[in-house]
Length: 279
Image (cartoon, rainbow, N blue to C red; front, side, top):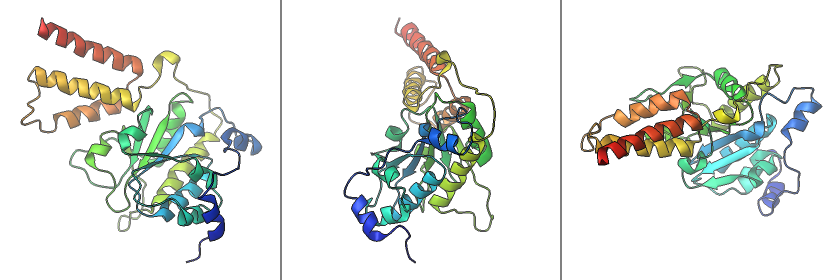
C-alpha cells in the first residue's frame, strides 16, 4: 500500500521542527463563515495511550488536522515518531512536531476538567456512556474555559480499568455489531468530526463563570486520595478487603463533573473529619 505525502518529505520533517505557523482554528472558522465562539478547539487534547504503530499516529494527526483539532498527546508510545508517521500524516506535520509525550495517562490529563475515553471493552463496573454527538454537545456546553481530553487506548487491548477510572465518561461509536472495532485514526476522525460540525452551529455561549471552573483531573485525583485515606482511617473502607467501593465512588463523582470550588468544599469536609477524629 502506498503512503501519500512522500517518504522523503516525512523523513525530513521528523528531523527538524516544522516552520509552518501554528494551526489557527479561529481563522479557519472565519474563513469558512463558521461562528467561532462556541468552543476553543485548541483546548481539546487527543490522547493516544500506548500506541504501537507509527502509521496510526500519523493517520490520527491527519484526521485531527482535517477537523482543525491540533493538540496531540502521546502516552508511553511504543514506536518511534519518524518517517512512517510523517508520511501517513500527509502534511499534518505541525501536529506531530508539537506533540506532547507523557509517561502515564494521569500526567497527560492532569490539567483537564473533562476526560472522555473511547472504549468498546465490556467492563465489570459500567461507566457512564455518551454517543459521539452527545460528546460534542457536552464539550460545547463547557465553553472555552475547560480543557478536554479525548482518550484512545491501545490498538489491541484498549484502556486498563485503572486508566478508565481517570475518565468522566466513555464514548461508544455505533458500528456493525459483528465488526465494531474501529481503527484508531477512524475513531479519532469520527469524534473530531462531530466536534467540528457542532462548532459550526449558531448557538449562544454557555461558559462556566470563573467561580465555577471545572476541577482538573489532578485536583480530582487529589480528592480521591484524600477520600480513601479518610475512609480507611475511619474504618469505613477495609483496606484488606476494599471490594469495588472506591471504583463506585469514582464513578459517582466523575459523573458529577465537580467544579474546583466543590472539590475544595469536599476536601474541607474530609479535613474536618480528620480534625474531629484526632481531637
